[in-house]
Image (cartoon, rainbow, N blue to C red; front, top):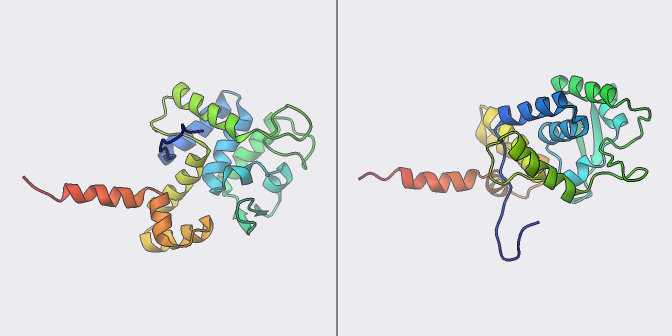
Length: 197
């Protein structure tokens, strides 16, 4: 939570840093947080929607699931990346899950109680320090932004990528998506670079 009258915004991780973090967390036996970070960067969902995920949703044979977004009440279909499917199965096995209907991100503080967003933000700040992550403001929203930046940067057609992301993120315009991803700010700052002395 930010201080009153202060302005903070989440930053995105570089894709390689994000995927390396997922691997390191798994290696360090922090399976649920590894899965949470992985789901955040591969699905582009808000944290409130990630916390709704069950093992059955992630392990279904179709490699996709449908979720009703908490914020917008809109239904969204998500396809699970083939490479990420193996990581999901590895976490499932390592955690010795017995019930596919169980939420993926149980806190252990009571039956079917998932992590709180505040607790996850505290954990992410600890991970930033522990793993020397190069990110200024690391929060749950950083995962969604990391997804967006990767999609944008991997696309051969930037405008088409922005339109797709606008629809995935349920933004009302491409301008909002550009601002959300920090692209608008970069464009504005690049204005200063065109000057010569």
